[in-house]
Every structure is written in structure tokens, then in C-alpha cells.
Length: 367
Image 1 (spheres, rainbow, N blue to C red):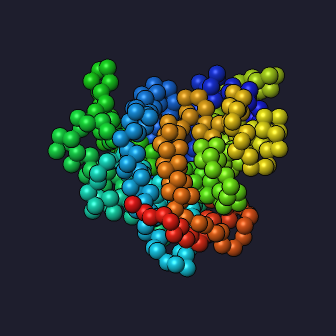
Image 2 (image 1 turned 180 degrees about the vertical axis):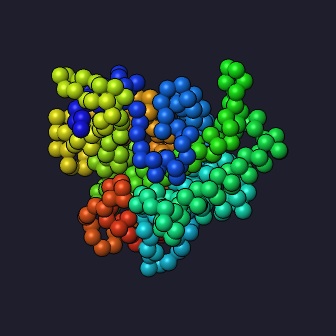
Image 3 (image 1 turned 45 degrees about the horizontal axis):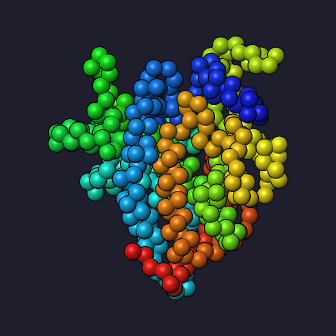
């Protein structure tokens, strides 16, 4: 357990080659062994560059009106009742983040394929953190079967894209993956493309939806807060959705006189660093103004650090800001039930997904 910025930098940046990402095999099977975040070295760097290119600020610029349309569509689906309408905030944010992920990965997707993809993805998602038994009827077994169907659906989408010769444009992630050629002319196979698409969908889901849920919770508690960017940053610090990343020493490693034996897990504790009063005075108080000054290096890592830092961080921030903008300018919100409490599934989340009653402001309209 590594609880200092220097130790986190040692594991994630300066000596990252000595620590490999490590996940339970049960999770690798559900996402796919070729997914970016299971690897390091040449394959990882190659895939990371491709995914970062697709998720760069320049690439995302054209996506803004589509994300806005998706946010408005999500809000419209809640209804329009004078007495307010009740939502499970986390579930609604998760639906929204899924739609944004589909947009960025595929662009416009045929409705039939979209629905099949969505249906099977949610089964995989539900079984992802379940006990990994393959007994028929268990959540994990259902998830494995749904993952097989997802693979078939993705191959159908890939083949259709190839047949229609629509791989020249690189406006979406699928095109980037299909267009890639190595120095020797090698290309990614369909399984590698499919695994990385599922990996990106997973990475774009719970974490982003959880952050948006916490932002809404803090805005509900502090309605006078208006500077959305600082609120988002402080929400990510307070919630620390990713408590720590799993790394495994690939050799015996010494750090400041301590031995980390080969095969041992090394976990930089982001939550401890984000709540250290040395770097963030009065750390348990929600105070967005602390981000008027940039934090000290390696003390604020909501998206990780180093070669394995989240390549989709700009997309996550963009969709969060767009959704929160529409919520705070067009709605009043009242949390139902407990005003406090945290549950883990596995990420820290307001109790029960933050059930809330929403009213549309009488002076606003959804365009």
C-alpha cells in the first residue's frame, strides 16, 4: 500500500516497467484478453496511441452537439410531471454515459445492432463483479454467454463497415482501429478490435456515471455553487472513484529501503493522497475553491498517472460538464430518503444510487 505522491509516481511513472497491470482472470474473460488495460510494453503503447487519437480534444470537438443531443434525450425520457418525476440518478447517468460511449466508438449505429449490443452489454456488466462461478444460471455464467454474443455482434458491425468501405474516416474509434497498420503492414484482427471496444465501453461506464452522480449530490447539498469545472474537480477529489489501481511487481523492487518482492501487488492509494490534509487542507470539506490554484504534482490523480492513465479523461470531463449544465440550468432536484451514506459496487456511490425527484424550472425549456 503506497500512500505518498512520490511512491505513486515511482510505481506509475518512473519505474512503471517494473509493475504490470493485474486483474482477476474472471474479468479478463469478460472484457477480452486483448483489451488495452491488461497489457504493457509495445502492444500497450500501440493501442494507447490509437485510442488517445480517437479521444483527443481535436477529435471530440465534432462530438459536442451529439453529446448535447444525447443529454437532452436522456432528460426528456424522465417525463414532464408538475409534481416532479423520480429518477435513480446513477442509473440515468449510466444510461447516458453508455450512449456517449456508443457514439464515440461507432458513430451512427443501426438501431437493431444498437439494441442487441445494449441488451448483451448490460448482462456482461451485471456479471462483471459477481462471484466467478460457471454454474449454469449464475450471473457470471450468463455474463460469459452474453460476452460471446457481444463478440459476434461486433464482428457483424466490423464486417459491415469493411463491406461498405467506410473505414477511411477516422471520426470514431472503430475506424481508428480498422485503419491502423504497423510498420510491417500488420493490422489488428477482429478479436483485438472487439476486445478493445468492449474495454473502452467498460472504462467509460461506471466511473463516469459515478462522478456525475457525486457532482449532482454535491450541487444538491451546496446549491449556491456555480463554477461547474471546479465543482467537478472537487467532486472527483472527494469521491475518489478509483481508490487505487492494481499493479504487480515483475521483479524484486526496492523503494526507499523497502523490498517489494516479485509477484506482490503494489497499490498507490489515490484516495489517501486526495484526502491528505498536507495537500488538501480540511480534506473532508467540499470546497471547489481549492482548485483556484493547481494542486501540487502527483497529489491529484482522478484519472491515474503515467502510461496507464485513463486515455478517455477528456471525454469523461466533456460529457460530465454537458450533462451537469443542462441539469442545473433546467431543473430543481431533491434527494429522496437518506441525505448521506455510501455504498460500494465496487465504486463508492451515494446510497441507493441517489434517488431524486426532479422538477423542470418553469422558465426553462428543453430544446
